[in-house]
Length: 117
Length: 265
Image (tube, rainbow over all chains, first blue to last red; front, side):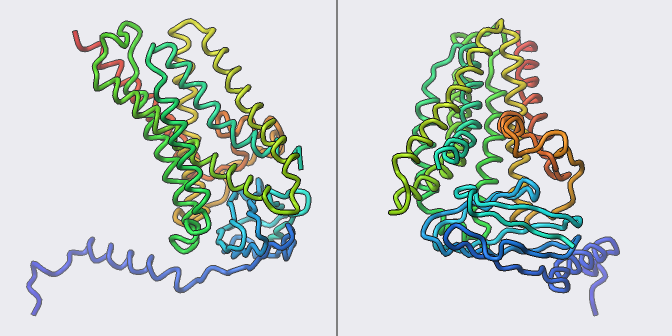
């Protein structure tokens, strides 16, 4: 028998349920992962399609020996990616549209865009 | 290559140059020593080099978001130390001679740490960018020339702001510099929030407004305003709230100090 004093009160029980459901939420809806690579100062693929109003994880591999900076004014994202390394950038949820991105260190060649549909 | 280097380095230099020029102008009004500039600059250079050198490893921390977490920590530290700087400022009547030693110590620490953190964030990107010049395919001479022009332009804009501020009468100088520092602190906390959103530590939300049609962030004036007051065409609610908290804390701390001075006989 549980001692009545140790039994969690209603608001506390509600908080526990809320916290457990919040913690398990990511397990129920896993974030989609999109892979990108940088090679010879070019993005592969240069055009990516992602679903609207969904958070997406960009997994970027820089295969060049030089560093690059992923930058997009439209996505509000900026991140340095060292040479021969990999990294992660979370984007979205975004409304449908076209979101260009570029490599700030080599902007002439490193260009791409994300199509949100 | 040349124009890319000029724009990149100018952009990175501008933020730190503006902070230093406002602090120097305030220093002129406060009649304090400029030792913080040399210590902060030297520490910033060392830390930015170390950060750049270990960037690949740091980026892998916390499941590949180490860079965002480190930048956000440094940017939040800048906000905190600018607020502490505001708390250490002397009013119009007190000068450095009759201000307390603890207040002078806080002035030195706050100015040094905020400058060192600002240089670490921006300088590390310049170091990483420049590391690419030593590849066999790179045109080293052109790149170095571009970086030098970008750096010199950034410093010149800072010098210009310093002289504009210095030409103001003392109370106006103090008020304007404090206002610019509040905006800078707000900008830094807002950028920290953005970094944590990018890392998925803060839930991302859609932009509250979109002013990119009037003033694009990629335009020259957009970039200048970004460095000066943290202009963002599509800010999130987290960014707006953190901007306001950062800016308000600086003004509040300055007000607390002023209140303390007037209440003590």
